[in-house]
Length: 102
Length: 102
DNA sequence: ACCCAGCATTCCTTGACAGGCATATAACCA
DNA sequence: TGGTTATATGCCTGTCAAGGAATGCTGGGT
Image 1 (cartoon, chains in turn yellow, green, cyan, blue):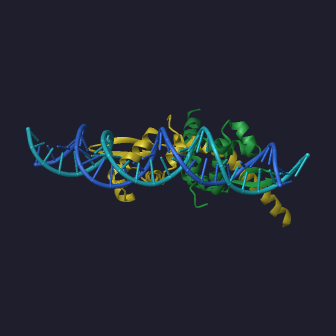
Image 2 (tube, rainbow over the protein chains, first blue to last red):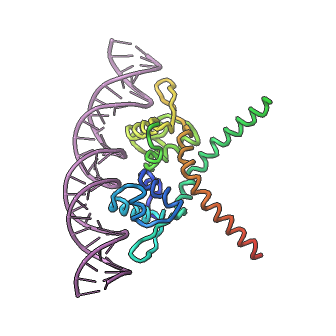
Image 3 (cartoon, chains in turn cyan, green, yellow, purple):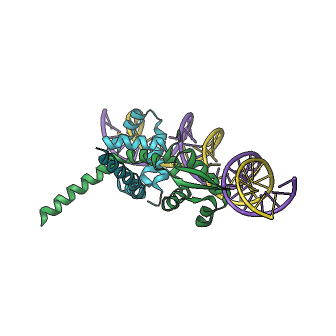
């Protein structure tokens, strides 16, 4: 949580892991197969994601099942908000313009 | 453009620069004063932001006026989209639950 | 108790910045 | 032209993160 979500998301492999987990929670081994990375690499990325609160983990026998937690993403979304309104405002202006042309 | 917007945004100083430019476009010197960083540091960050298309620059006499371009941020927003719907969906469910309690 | 599967962690090496300082470049002015 | 302001860039160094290989650890099965 003390960790910067932006910095964590800067790594493409981690975004791929999240994109995979977003569809189905999965074990480390499943991620290894799906993403074609080494098991230590996946485990390390999961560690970073976990420290940032972006994923949570439950134990099922010898396997760890990971799933996404969106909480830290809201901080990212919040930062993005004012910028988003910049382009939606412009879009609105564009729409008004187009409407006025009809 | 070939540059990853996420990686560029990973640097807190660069987000601060964007946050400043979002309110008012400004010259390098103004950013230096506002953010309390060295001029070379600011110039280097601006270079990275420019290469990523996050800012554009026009020349006014000996000064360069920088401003935000939101285009690359839409890619970030698009990536975030499915996650955002994850928590809004949950919020909707929560609201329904609370409503049913009244 | 032993062995194995599934993960985590360590060590090591390599590469990618970030910041400071000095310097180059460009535009303006006298 | 020479000087000055405003900005960009080069060089150097310290720091940190990523990936590979090997190893540690834990729970389950026999």
